[in-house]
Length: 429
Image (cartoon, rainbow, N blue to C red; front, side):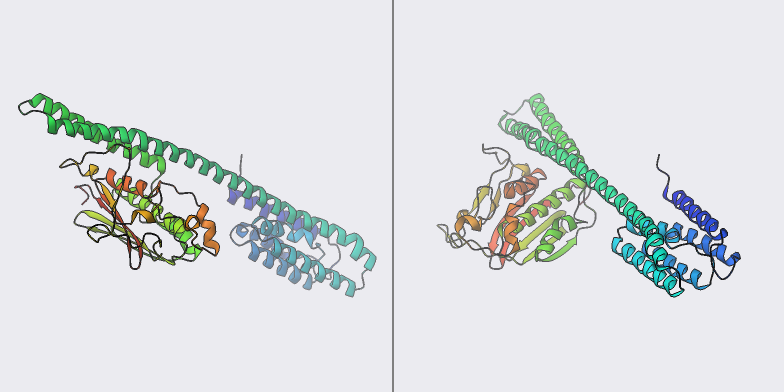
């Protein structure tokens, strides 16, 4: 059973006060007998323990200065280790090991010089008495630092366990999204196909197919909620976990989020699209220096733009089509079979990218410069091994399609741009 912090510190303070009061009452040496001020000093050192968790260094320094003032007043000897042991332990426990060691060494040197100048026996002071003080102070520092190390190790283990659980939840969420979600989407699409192909005058058949479509839509909504719960709540309100790695790598990051509160499924999809796009910049655009994220709601649609200033690949930067425009590549998601595009079913709309095919990898990501011989230097080369949480552009496109939206990518004169349009539910638009 763990004692709460405040009662534990109060008990420690009482122990410090009682110990010092007992040593003062023994009246070893000193020019003046102990009086009320001496005992008040002991109580003051004990009271400092109540602040040791919040201000460990201040408690240690005040204790050391108070000890010097006590001896300057000529009161009976109380040693140097006993008054400072608790403060040294607290500072070391809080992680201020250097402060604890330097303070202990400074107090010991001052005490040693003072006692030698008073004419006390050098053999007794420097050998017999000093060894005891050093041992007690070192034990207090070692105990505090050891407790801090064990606590840090326990916290690290807990973080690793939480991360492991989160990874398992993400794996389950991906499996649900990729397998069950795809199956339900196919059911919905074929229900629409059957309704379009059904001969007129069969109201019961049309009603049954409509109910199948509605049940599939409800199942998809429930599935998105379950997947969102497994993945954890994320939103555009806090993009720090996504953008901090880019900042730390040296990218100039610009963020403008002008959306207000978003529905959970839209906010989560937008967050994951930004995450995947920024990860692609880190992995595939070593020559880029800028990343820009802009999110705004226009006419009930969340418009998301992620751009960088990385140059296009040399081997496909100028591949025109027969009409002179850029070549168009369709991003396939969910299944290798084609998905029919039905009126009123935007979820089946194709997602297109204006990138030349030769400039993109098999997953729709920019071609790896390492594979084409392009130079890359500096610490960003190590980012080539960053694992992607999704599946490149197909993964981003699938998220947009699941909400009835669209995803477009293109090279511009200024770099590479990912644009997503995610319609908001009618009750949230």
